[in-house]
Length: 190
Image (cartoon, rainbow, N blue to C red; front, side, top):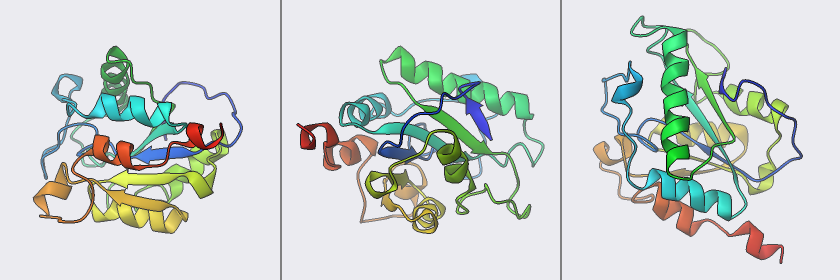
């Protein structure tokens, strides 16, 4: 389900960074749901990372499970408001997202959009296709890494959010470290 923008202009295929939200862009604690836009707190590295990814030639798209809707912790409208707050907070720091997609279903719903299923990436690709050979998934949980595998994309672990809690030794310190490490696609085309 697309939370933002309200309408998507079909664009040509582009390298895309599919980013998880909670634990990658904003602070996350296992078992605690963000149920109010005021609770969303960005990591200091989030906006610089999104800006750097865009400068390197990536379309930046958020893909996130938000089962708090199915669990009754928030309404669908409130989940959209929280995602719009993410867009606003990043934009205030000069970082722009191409789109935000989320799955409102619970773990037992059997839907095709709940990560690690690739439904959110498929929906994003129908609206603005990714150049799959140059795209990737970044997340802090095994389900994010599995999403990348199932979608046929490279996937990277960031050790913020639950990536840190799991004691992961591999992966990137944060999203900015990953953004610095991925290829600069604009430089390659010059």
